[in-house]
Image 1 (cartoon, rainbow, N blue to C red):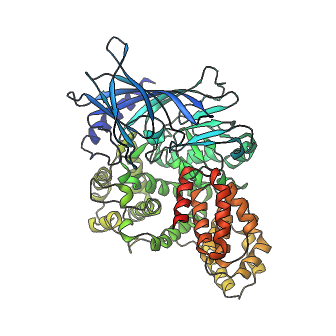
Image 2: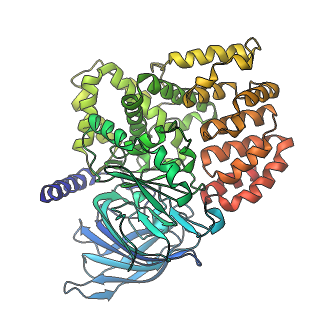
Image 3: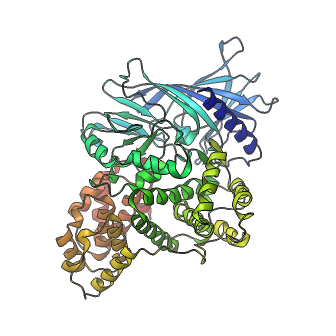
Length: 615
């Protein structure tokens, strides 16, 4: 234990030195080059009737500038009751504070005036019922309908809506918590979770590894647990626990696959929780407790690439974190690349290539809807708000494509140790693209200058689109699907003769992507009659079929109503409403469905569809 503590302390010290020159995160008020949070302790009580968390946050501080006498924290909609500081004799005494005027994007700066530089500060507060990070579900919005449920989504800058923190990925800290919750409800957090705990006296947690604020996570509800491996378990509502445990049975194999490439898993346990349907994204890589959408449960483990992706974040994103959201591609581009490598080890080259081709095809197709100015991985402007210049979704495949290009040219014998070295040398640190480029030059390009020129590297990072030099993956199995699809669209191959009964999920997704806006209503009707697509248990397949059906005018309203009422994942919901609202015949019906479904959706999903309706 002592060696681990010393190693973490050394990593933290190196991170401070490396980040001293970082530009201020434009999305944070915190002056983290003056003072940094090293530990956070939360003592909170969950009140479901008021939809609030009430209590205090205790921050342990490391003062870097000995002349500073103000602590600035990020908040959003927090009601501050009082602030205390701990004197040298251990007594807690009041401190003066003020809240800035609210900014619609950044919230409010909490400025605490200090006479000295205390080691610890406590802020007593309660959250607002409309806290952006927290969704409070009524019993009717849960699977059993018996008890309410609450879960958080702190990324990117919503941790400040449920705790006063330095809400920037540039700052990492350990944390602990004691959470009170109503009887009969379990609390889990992105920390060490004791499966034997009863919650008597409050649920207690400890996260011994330093994490950025966006990885603070909590869920409270009627939650059961099943072990799925020697160091992993799944948590879910009781009615979903068995299906979740079956779906996630390959977790230990995935951990071992990632370790074989990038070194030991450094977070102790890898547990997961399958959340209620309103969870707006596929997964959130909260360390020690990945949050997952129930839409990944297909009954046949065919959507396990989502699990591989969230697990991959244990190296890229959680272990080495983008220092600000300007460098988002360091998290998601790296993770998307690592995901494909894990899939290849577990399920073979053929499966990895199919997934990768679908990923690349969808990336190229997305370019037509993204302004060219927002297709870069990075901007050279040090102070720009990331949301004004980049498309977050494109960072996943484009960043991965850059790494794959480097791998192809250098060879895996060279590239794999290079990438593992990046994780090892920057473990538990937050990094910038400039740091990665320095590492890239010193450890790869200087030794192998033919791998990539500076001009091409600049094109990948700062240019629009995908460079023409990028090699596209061509899967032989997907080529065979394309041959059948082309003949089928022309009416030359009967629907019954398609070999689709043996297709994988990736093959179906590829096929459905390619026929969208091309197949007729009659063709989709035949496809559905033979392959029962509108009742598919695979949500990725069902979603793509519904989208093609809406565009073609094939009536799937009964099934689509059920889907939109029970699925809250933005990736599915927003494109479907977009398609429905664009068709005058469907618009009124879609508005009626949304009126019923809106209370079931996460606030971010609500906002997204609200914007569509305003248009």
